[in-house]
Length: 453
Image (cartoon, rainbow, N blue to C red; front, side, top):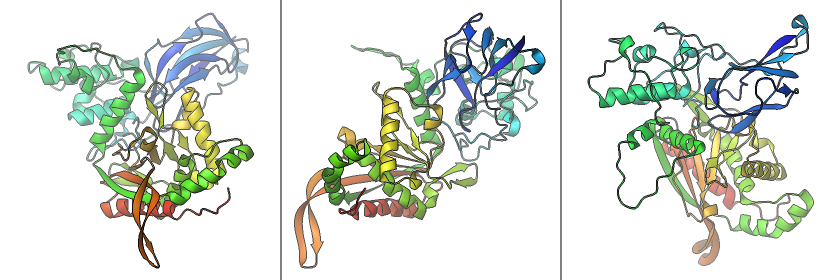
Protein backbone atom coordinates (compact mmCIF):
# COMPACT_ATOMS: atom_id res chain seq x y z
CA UNK A 1 0.00 0.00 0.00
CA UNK A 2 1.34 3.43 -0.89
CA UNK A 3 0.35 7.01 -0.13
CA UNK A 4 0.10 9.44 -3.05
CA UNK A 5 0.18 13.19 -2.44
CA UNK A 6 -2.54 15.30 -4.05
CA UNK A 7 -0.91 18.65 -4.79
CA UNK A 8 -2.51 22.05 -5.36
CA UNK A 9 -1.96 22.31 -9.14
CA UNK A 10 -0.18 25.15 -10.91
CA UNK A 11 -2.68 27.30 -12.82
CA UNK A 12 -0.59 30.01 -14.46
CA UNK A 13 2.53 31.96 -13.63
CA UNK A 14 0.64 34.79 -11.94
CA UNK A 15 -1.49 32.55 -9.69
CA UNK A 16 0.31 31.82 -6.44
CA UNK A 17 -2.50 30.48 -4.26
CA UNK A 18 -6.06 29.14 -4.38
CA UNK A 19 -8.98 28.98 -1.96
CA UNK A 20 -10.68 25.68 -1.20
CA UNK A 21 -14.41 25.99 -1.88
CA UNK A 22 -15.72 22.47 -1.35
CA UNK A 23 -14.51 18.93 -0.70
CA UNK A 24 -16.39 16.38 -2.82
CA UNK A 25 -14.66 13.49 -1.02
CA UNK A 26 -14.01 12.86 2.67
CA UNK A 27 -11.43 10.64 4.40
CA UNK A 28 -12.36 7.01 3.86
CA UNK A 29 -14.13 7.64 0.54
CA UNK A 30 -13.11 5.67 -2.53
CA UNK A 31 -11.76 7.78 -5.39
CA UNK A 32 -11.05 6.94 -9.01
CA UNK A 33 -8.26 8.45 -11.06
CA UNK A 34 -9.35 11.79 -12.57
CA UNK A 35 -12.47 11.89 -10.36
CA UNK A 36 -13.16 15.30 -8.81
CA UNK A 37 -11.91 15.50 -5.22
CA UNK A 38 -12.46 19.19 -4.46
CA UNK A 39 -13.34 22.58 -5.92
CA UNK A 40 -10.98 25.53 -5.67
CA UNK A 41 -11.10 29.21 -6.58
CA UNK A 42 -8.38 31.56 -7.75
CA UNK A 43 -8.72 35.29 -8.35
CA UNK A 44 -9.56 34.45 -11.98
CA UNK A 45 -11.76 31.38 -12.10
CA UNK A 46 -13.28 28.50 -10.12
CA UNK A 47 -12.24 24.97 -11.08
CA UNK A 48 -12.15 21.34 -9.96
CA UNK A 49 -9.13 19.32 -8.84
CA UNK A 50 -9.18 15.66 -9.96
CA UNK A 51 -7.56 12.74 -8.21
CA UNK A 52 -4.15 11.75 -9.52
CA UNK A 53 -4.52 8.13 -8.40
CA UNK A 54 -7.14 5.49 -7.64
CA UNK A 55 -7.61 4.41 -4.06
CA UNK A 56 -9.00 5.68 -0.75
CA UNK A 57 -8.79 9.27 0.46
CA UNK A 58 -6.59 8.88 3.51
CA UNK A 59 -6.23 12.44 4.78
CA UNK A 60 -7.39 16.01 4.10
CA UNK A 61 -4.81 18.63 5.07
CA UNK A 62 -6.84 21.85 4.57
CA UNK A 63 -10.35 22.98 5.40
CA UNK A 64 -12.94 24.80 3.29
CA UNK A 65 -12.04 28.51 2.86
CA UNK A 66 -8.34 27.87 3.54
CA UNK A 67 -6.01 29.74 1.18
CA UNK A 68 -3.36 27.30 -0.02
CA UNK A 69 -0.09 28.09 -1.87
CA UNK A 70 0.35 26.43 -5.26
CA UNK A 71 2.40 23.25 -4.93
CA UNK A 72 1.27 22.44 -1.38
CA UNK A 73 0.08 18.93 -0.55
CA UNK A 74 -3.66 19.23 0.11
CA UNK A 75 -4.62 15.57 0.60
CA UNK A 76 -3.23 12.04 0.56
CA UNK A 77 -4.64 9.03 -1.24
CA UNK A 78 -3.87 5.45 -0.23
CA UNK A 79 -3.50 3.20 -3.25
CA UNK A 80 -3.20 -0.55 -3.65
CA UNK A 81 0.16 -0.16 -5.40
CA UNK A 82 3.21 -1.31 -3.48
CA UNK A 83 5.25 1.49 -1.87
CA UNK A 84 8.26 1.08 -4.12
CA UNK A 85 6.22 0.85 -7.30
CA UNK A 86 3.87 3.75 -6.58
CA UNK A 87 3.55 5.99 -9.56
CA UNK A 88 4.13 9.66 -9.21
CA UNK A 89 1.12 11.97 -9.28
CA UNK A 90 0.13 13.31 -12.66
CA UNK A 91 -0.10 16.87 -11.37
CA UNK A 92 2.62 19.01 -12.87
CA UNK A 93 5.47 19.95 -10.62
CA UNK A 94 5.14 23.56 -9.49
CA UNK A 95 7.58 25.90 -11.11
CA UNK A 96 10.18 27.54 -8.93
CA UNK A 97 9.88 31.24 -9.59
CA UNK A 98 12.46 33.79 -8.69
CA UNK A 99 9.90 36.57 -8.75
CA UNK A 100 6.18 36.99 -8.98
CA UNK A 101 5.09 38.99 -12.04
CA UNK A 102 2.17 40.14 -9.91
CA UNK A 103 0.51 43.45 -9.99
CA UNK A 104 -5.88 41.76 -11.04
CA UNK A 105 -7.10 40.08 -10.58
CA UNK A 106 -3.14 39.35 -10.68
CA UNK A 107 -0.94 40.19 -11.13
CA UNK A 108 1.70 39.72 -13.62
CA UNK A 109 3.83 42.75 -13.22
CA UNK A 110 2.67 43.31 -9.70
CA UNK A 111 5.43 45.66 -8.77
CA UNK A 112 4.49 49.21 -7.95
CA UNK A 113 6.94 51.93 -9.00
CA UNK A 114 9.93 51.79 -6.70
CA UNK A 115 8.81 48.50 -5.10
CA UNK A 116 10.82 45.54 -6.30
CA UNK A 117 9.59 41.95 -5.86
CA UNK A 118 11.66 40.22 -3.22
CA UNK A 119 13.57 37.01 -3.88
CA UNK A 120 12.50 35.78 -0.44
CA UNK A 121 9.41 34.11 -1.84
CA UNK A 122 11.13 32.18 -4.57
CA UNK A 123 10.06 28.75 -3.32
CA UNK A 124 6.35 28.49 -3.89
CA UNK A 125 6.07 24.75 -3.44
CA UNK A 126 7.62 24.56 0.03
CA UNK A 127 7.48 27.97 1.73
CA UNK A 128 9.92 28.21 4.62
CA UNK A 129 8.98 29.70 7.95
CA UNK A 130 11.59 31.79 9.66
CA UNK A 131 11.63 34.66 12.12
CA UNK A 132 12.86 37.60 10.11
CA UNK A 133 15.53 35.78 8.13
CA UNK A 134 14.13 36.89 4.77
CA UNK A 135 13.20 33.43 3.41
CA UNK A 136 9.54 33.61 4.35
CA UNK A 137 6.81 33.10 1.72
CA UNK A 138 4.50 36.04 0.94
CA UNK A 139 1.58 35.86 -1.47
CA UNK A 140 1.24 38.54 -4.18
CA UNK A 141 -1.82 39.99 -2.43
CA UNK A 142 0.05 40.36 0.88
CA UNK A 143 2.97 42.06 -0.89
CA UNK A 144 0.61 44.46 -2.67
CA UNK A 145 -1.13 45.42 0.56
CA UNK A 146 2.28 45.94 2.16
CA UNK A 147 3.37 48.18 -0.73
CA UNK A 148 0.12 50.18 -0.68
CA UNK A 149 0.29 50.72 3.09
CA UNK A 150 4.02 51.52 3.22
CA UNK A 151 4.90 48.44 5.28
CA UNK A 152 8.60 47.66 5.04
CA UNK A 153 10.00 44.17 4.62
CA UNK A 154 11.37 44.44 8.16
CA UNK A 155 7.88 45.02 9.51
CA UNK A 156 6.48 42.27 7.30
CA UNK A 157 9.05 39.77 8.53
CA UNK A 158 8.06 40.46 12.14
CA UNK A 159 4.30 40.00 11.70
CA UNK A 160 3.08 36.79 13.29
CA UNK A 161 1.59 34.56 10.58
CA UNK A 162 -1.38 32.27 11.21
CA UNK A 163 -1.32 30.60 7.80
CA UNK A 164 0.14 27.26 6.77
CA UNK A 165 3.71 26.90 8.13
CA UNK A 166 3.61 30.39 9.61
CA UNK A 167 2.62 32.18 6.40
CA UNK A 168 1.35 35.75 6.77
CA UNK A 169 -2.20 35.72 5.44
CA UNK A 170 -4.34 38.54 4.13
CA UNK A 171 -6.20 38.58 7.45
CA UNK A 172 -2.91 38.92 9.34
CA UNK A 173 -1.64 41.90 7.41
CA UNK A 174 -5.04 43.64 7.42
CA UNK A 175 -5.17 43.23 11.19
CA UNK A 176 -1.73 44.79 11.43
CA UNK A 177 -2.76 47.66 9.15
CA UNK A 178 -5.89 48.27 11.23
CA UNK A 179 -3.99 48.24 14.51
CA UNK A 180 -1.25 50.49 13.19
CA UNK A 181 -3.72 53.06 11.87
CA UNK A 182 -6.29 53.14 14.62
CA UNK A 183 -4.37 52.38 17.78
CA UNK A 184 -1.38 54.64 18.30
CA UNK A 185 -0.45 52.62 21.39
CA UNK A 186 -0.06 49.35 19.50
CA UNK A 187 3.57 48.23 19.54
CA UNK A 188 5.03 47.80 16.06
CA UNK A 189 6.65 44.47 15.20
CA UNK A 190 10.17 45.83 14.73
CA UNK A 191 10.27 47.06 18.33
CA UNK A 192 8.71 43.97 19.92
CA UNK A 193 7.53 41.19 17.63
CA UNK A 194 6.16 39.12 20.52
CA UNK A 195 3.66 41.83 21.41
CA UNK A 196 2.07 41.90 17.95
CA UNK A 197 -1.68 41.33 18.46
CA UNK A 198 -3.03 38.01 17.24
CA UNK A 199 -4.95 38.42 13.98
CA UNK A 200 -8.71 38.29 14.09
CA UNK A 201 -11.21 37.77 11.28
CA UNK A 202 -11.09 40.88 9.15
CA UNK A 203 -12.80 42.11 5.97
CA UNK A 204 -11.31 40.86 2.70
CA UNK A 205 -9.70 44.15 1.71
CA UNK A 206 -8.37 47.37 3.12
CA UNK A 207 -11.32 49.14 1.54
CA UNK A 208 -13.73 46.84 3.38
CA UNK A 209 -11.89 47.38 6.63
CA UNK A 210 -12.41 51.11 6.32
CA UNK A 211 -16.03 50.61 5.31
CA UNK A 212 -16.73 48.93 8.65
CA UNK A 213 -16.25 52.32 10.34
CA UNK A 214 -19.24 53.82 8.54
CA UNK A 215 -22.66 54.15 10.10
CA UNK A 216 -25.70 53.46 7.97
CA UNK A 217 -28.66 55.77 8.32
CA UNK A 218 -32.02 55.91 6.65
CA UNK A 219 -33.82 53.16 4.79
CA UNK A 220 -31.00 50.90 3.53
CA UNK A 221 -30.37 47.28 2.67
CA UNK A 222 -26.91 45.88 3.39
CA UNK A 223 -25.77 43.21 0.91
CA UNK A 224 -22.60 41.23 1.52
CA UNK A 225 -20.33 41.05 -1.52
CA UNK A 226 -19.91 37.59 -2.97
CA UNK A 227 -16.41 36.19 -3.36
CA UNK A 228 -16.02 37.17 -7.02
CA UNK A 229 -17.23 40.72 -6.42
CA UNK A 230 -14.65 41.10 -3.62
CA UNK A 231 -11.91 39.90 -5.98
CA UNK A 232 -13.04 42.29 -8.72
CA UNK A 233 -13.09 45.17 -6.23
CA UNK A 234 -9.57 44.37 -5.03
CA UNK A 235 -8.36 43.99 -8.61
CA UNK A 236 -9.76 47.35 -9.69
CA UNK A 237 -8.35 49.23 -6.70
CA UNK A 238 -4.97 47.56 -7.20
CA UNK A 239 -4.94 48.51 -10.87
CA UNK A 240 -5.73 52.15 -10.08
CA UNK A 241 -2.90 52.22 -7.53
CA UNK A 242 -0.44 50.48 -9.85
CA UNK A 243 -0.92 52.24 -13.21
CA UNK A 244 -1.30 55.97 -13.92
CA UNK A 245 -4.32 55.75 -16.22
CA UNK A 246 -4.75 57.93 -19.30
CA UNK A 247 -7.73 57.52 -21.64
CA UNK A 248 -7.86 58.64 -25.27
CA UNK A 249 -11.01 58.76 -27.43
CA UNK A 250 -11.80 58.62 -31.12
CA UNK A 251 -14.74 57.68 -33.33
CA UNK A 252 -14.94 55.39 -36.31
CA UNK A 253 -17.30 55.14 -39.26
CA UNK A 254 -18.08 51.42 -39.22
CA UNK A 255 -20.80 51.52 -41.89
CA UNK A 256 -19.06 49.04 -44.21
CA UNK A 257 -18.48 46.62 -41.34
CA UNK A 258 -22.12 46.79 -40.16
CA UNK A 259 -23.56 46.34 -43.65
CA UNK A 260 -21.23 43.42 -44.40
CA UNK A 261 -22.22 41.62 -41.19
CA UNK A 262 -25.92 42.18 -41.89
CA UNK A 263 -25.42 40.72 -45.36
CA UNK A 264 -23.52 37.56 -44.38
CA UNK A 265 -24.68 36.66 -40.86
CA UNK A 266 -27.34 34.14 -41.93
CA UNK A 267 -25.08 32.39 -44.44
CA UNK A 268 -22.17 32.52 -41.97
CA UNK A 269 -24.13 30.72 -39.25
CA UNK A 270 -25.52 28.16 -41.68
CA UNK A 271 -22.08 27.33 -43.13
CA UNK A 272 -19.89 27.58 -40.02
CA UNK A 273 -22.35 26.57 -37.31
CA UNK A 274 -21.65 29.66 -35.21
CA UNK A 275 -22.82 33.27 -35.14
CA UNK A 276 -20.76 36.21 -36.38
CA UNK A 277 -20.86 39.06 -33.87
CA UNK A 278 -18.93 42.33 -33.86
CA UNK A 279 -16.43 41.11 -31.26
CA UNK A 280 -14.31 38.90 -33.57
CA UNK A 281 -14.25 41.74 -36.12
CA UNK A 282 -12.92 44.10 -33.44
CA UNK A 283 -10.35 41.55 -32.23
CA UNK A 284 -9.13 40.99 -35.80
CA UNK A 285 -8.45 44.73 -36.20
CA UNK A 286 -6.82 45.01 -32.75
CA UNK A 287 -4.42 42.11 -33.44
CA UNK A 288 -3.26 43.75 -36.67
CA UNK A 289 -2.64 47.08 -34.97
CA UNK A 290 -0.77 45.57 -32.01
CA UNK A 291 1.88 44.34 -34.45
CA UNK A 292 2.45 47.97 -35.47
CA UNK A 293 2.47 49.25 -31.87
CA UNK A 294 3.99 46.44 -29.76
CA UNK A 295 4.37 48.55 -26.60
CA UNK A 296 0.63 48.29 -25.92
CA UNK A 297 1.18 44.52 -25.67
CA UNK A 298 3.56 44.61 -22.73
CA UNK A 299 3.76 44.64 -18.94
CA UNK A 300 5.95 46.25 -16.29
CA UNK A 301 8.23 44.51 -13.80
CA UNK A 302 9.84 47.15 -11.61
CA UNK A 303 11.98 49.18 -14.01
CA UNK A 304 11.77 46.59 -16.78
CA UNK A 305 9.38 46.60 -19.75
CA UNK A 306 8.31 43.09 -20.71
CA UNK A 307 7.34 43.09 -24.40
CA UNK A 308 5.01 40.18 -25.14
CA UNK A 309 5.58 38.43 -28.46
CA UNK A 310 2.31 36.50 -28.24
CA UNK A 311 -0.89 38.45 -28.86
CA UNK A 312 -3.37 37.03 -26.35
CA UNK A 313 -6.51 39.15 -26.34
CA UNK A 314 -8.92 39.01 -23.43
CA UNK A 315 -12.57 39.91 -23.88
CA UNK A 316 -14.48 41.18 -20.87
CA UNK A 317 -17.61 39.05 -20.46
CA UNK A 318 -20.57 39.75 -18.18
CA UNK A 319 -21.84 36.80 -16.16
CA UNK A 320 -25.52 36.19 -15.31
CA UNK A 321 -24.70 37.19 -11.71
CA UNK A 322 -23.63 40.64 -12.91
CA UNK A 323 -19.96 39.94 -12.22
CA UNK A 324 -17.27 40.17 -14.86
CA UNK A 325 -14.66 37.73 -16.14
CA UNK A 326 -12.06 38.01 -18.92
CA UNK A 327 -11.52 34.84 -20.97
CA UNK A 328 -8.51 35.00 -23.29
CA UNK A 329 -8.05 34.14 -26.97
CA UNK A 330 -4.43 33.02 -27.23
CA UNK A 331 -2.47 33.93 -30.37
CA UNK A 332 -5.44 35.86 -31.69
CA UNK A 333 -3.40 37.10 -34.66
CA UNK A 334 -3.07 33.52 -35.96
CA UNK A 335 -6.81 32.93 -36.39
CA UNK A 336 -8.84 33.85 -39.45
CA UNK A 337 -12.25 35.47 -38.93
CA UNK A 338 -14.08 32.13 -38.72
CA UNK A 339 -11.62 30.87 -36.12
CA UNK A 340 -11.98 34.06 -34.07
CA UNK A 341 -15.78 33.85 -34.20
CA UNK A 342 -15.70 30.26 -32.91
CA UNK A 343 -13.25 31.14 -30.14
CA UNK A 344 -15.31 34.15 -29.03
CA UNK A 345 -18.57 32.18 -28.94
CA UNK A 346 -17.01 29.19 -27.19
CA UNK A 347 -15.49 31.30 -24.42
CA UNK A 348 -18.60 33.43 -23.99
CA UNK A 349 -20.79 30.34 -23.71
CA UNK A 350 -18.41 28.70 -21.23
CA UNK A 351 -18.38 31.88 -19.12
CA UNK A 352 -22.17 32.09 -19.03
CA UNK A 353 -22.42 28.43 -17.94
CA UNK A 354 -19.56 28.65 -15.41
CA UNK A 355 -17.51 26.13 -17.39
CA UNK A 356 -14.34 28.14 -18.01
CA UNK A 357 -11.11 26.31 -17.25
CA UNK A 358 -8.20 28.04 -15.47
CA UNK A 359 -6.21 28.21 -18.71
CA UNK A 360 -9.11 30.07 -20.39
CA UNK A 361 -8.41 33.18 -18.31
CA UNK A 362 -4.60 33.13 -18.19
CA UNK A 363 -1.79 34.93 -20.01
CA UNK A 364 -3.79 37.78 -21.53
CA UNK A 365 -1.68 40.58 -23.00
CA UNK A 366 -4.41 43.05 -24.06
CA UNK A 367 -8.11 43.37 -23.25
CA UNK A 368 -11.17 44.64 -25.13
CA UNK A 369 -14.48 45.41 -23.43
CA UNK A 370 -17.67 46.08 -25.36
CA UNK A 371 -19.50 48.70 -23.28
CA UNK A 372 -21.79 49.35 -26.26
CA UNK A 373 -23.63 46.08 -25.76
CA UNK A 374 -25.30 47.68 -22.74
CA UNK A 375 -26.07 50.91 -24.59
CA UNK A 376 -23.09 53.04 -23.49
CA UNK A 377 -21.66 55.38 -26.10
CA UNK A 378 -18.20 55.23 -24.56
CA UNK A 379 -16.36 54.29 -21.39
CA UNK A 380 -13.13 54.78 -19.46
CA UNK A 381 -12.11 51.19 -18.68
CA UNK A 382 -9.67 50.20 -15.94
CA UNK A 383 -6.53 48.38 -17.08
CA UNK A 384 -6.53 44.62 -16.52
CA UNK A 385 -3.24 44.11 -14.67
CA UNK A 386 -0.51 43.27 -15.50
CA UNK A 387 -1.40 44.57 -18.96
CA UNK A 388 -0.80 48.19 -19.94
CA UNK A 389 -3.80 48.95 -22.15
CA UNK A 390 -7.50 48.16 -22.58
CA UNK A 391 -9.88 49.16 -25.39
CA UNK A 392 -13.57 49.94 -24.93
CA UNK A 393 -15.94 49.83 -27.90
CA UNK A 394 -19.10 51.90 -27.62
CA UNK A 395 -22.60 51.48 -29.00
CA UNK A 396 -22.95 51.76 -32.79
CA UNK A 397 -25.38 54.55 -33.68
CA UNK A 398 -26.65 56.01 -36.93
CA UNK A 399 -25.73 59.68 -37.17
CA UNK A 400 -25.59 62.38 -39.86
CA UNK A 401 -21.95 63.08 -40.64
CA UNK A 402 -19.97 65.06 -43.19
CA UNK A 403 -18.64 62.87 -46.00
CA UNK A 404 -15.75 64.09 -48.14
CA UNK A 405 -16.08 63.20 -51.82
CA UNK A 406 -14.31 64.17 -55.03
CA UNK A 407 -17.25 66.41 -55.86
CA UNK A 408 -17.18 68.15 -52.48
CA UNK A 409 -18.54 67.60 -48.99
CA UNK A 410 -21.96 66.08 -48.39
CA UNK A 411 -23.97 64.88 -45.42
CA UNK A 412 -24.95 61.24 -45.08
CA UNK A 413 -26.34 58.79 -42.53
CA UNK A 414 -23.51 56.60 -41.26
CA UNK A 415 -23.00 53.97 -38.57
CA UNK A 416 -20.67 55.62 -36.04
CA UNK A 417 -18.93 54.20 -32.98
CA UNK A 418 -16.75 55.73 -30.25
CA UNK A 419 -13.57 53.94 -29.20
CA UNK A 420 -11.69 54.63 -25.96
CA UNK A 421 -8.26 53.36 -24.94
CA UNK A 422 -7.03 53.44 -21.34
CA UNK A 423 -3.29 52.94 -21.04
CA UNK A 424 -0.50 52.89 -18.47
CA UNK A 425 1.34 56.20 -18.81
CA UNK A 426 4.50 54.69 -17.31
CA UNK A 427 5.01 52.81 -20.57
CA UNK A 428 2.58 54.13 -23.17
CA UNK A 429 2.88 57.84 -23.90
CA UNK A 430 0.04 59.87 -25.36
CA UNK A 431 1.49 59.83 -28.86
CA UNK A 432 1.71 56.03 -28.92
CA UNK A 433 -1.68 55.52 -27.28
CA UNK A 434 -3.49 57.98 -29.56
CA UNK A 435 -1.74 56.65 -32.67
CA UNK A 436 -2.63 53.07 -31.81
CA UNK A 437 -6.25 54.04 -31.21
CA UNK A 438 -6.41 55.96 -34.50
CA UNK A 439 -4.94 52.95 -36.31
CA UNK A 440 -7.72 50.71 -34.96
CA UNK A 441 -10.34 53.23 -36.12
CA UNK A 442 -8.71 53.29 -39.56
CA UNK A 443 -8.74 49.48 -39.76
CA UNK A 444 -12.46 49.42 -38.98
CA UNK A 445 -13.27 52.24 -41.40
CA UNK A 446 -11.37 50.56 -44.23
CA UNK A 447 -13.20 47.27 -43.78
CA UNK A 448 -13.76 45.64 -47.19
CA UNK A 449 -17.54 45.32 -47.75
CA UNK A 450 -16.91 42.72 -50.49
CA UNK A 451 -14.67 40.38 -48.47
CA UNK A 452 -15.48 36.73 -48.06
CA UNK A 453 -15.30 34.84 -44.81
